[in-house]
Length: 241
Image (cartoon, rainbow, N blue to C red; front, side, top):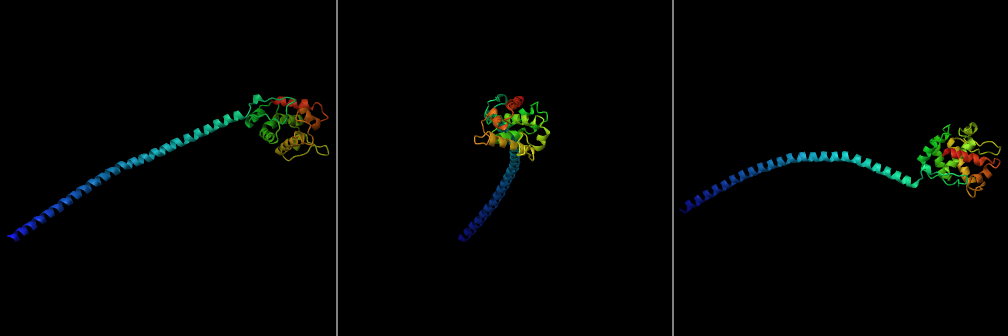
């Protein structure tokens, strides 16, 4: 009897074990299919989102960056113009007189000075308009009033720039030892020599020919034989403004 019961119990145990094994396999297959379906579904959802996010980001960068840069340039430009207005006078504020200090500049911007000279009707040759930027730079470098410098060149060379002055690039009648015009290699060199000579010899207190910083004081040493020189130069200055 006991042997029969043992055999019966063993059979029951084997059957239960088999059933448990089969049920485990079935559950595992079901779970695997469920996980696979979920992963597939997640992948299908995430891929379009990822692409959409990429497109949106690229679109935003492409659309926003140029606008940001343009805005920045506009702001910088406005700031520069405002700063320039604060730093410089307008052309209308330029004042001249026979007793003015010839080392005090007009304090206008380079662009405004060039525009001013471009509008001078007396400049029939276009020499002053063509070289307005150079004249401005030299006056800044040597601390010379721009209107005076142009007036002096016009008084010495004429508005048309006489042939001998044009040929020698000597625009303020700088003379050599033999009494002839000194000759320079180019317009720029001639203009710089003129500005340098005025600053060094006539408008600096330690200059060889310094007598003061007004038109009449400069005339005393620059052109002592012509008492009308002051009025001539000043008249040319008045034609500019």
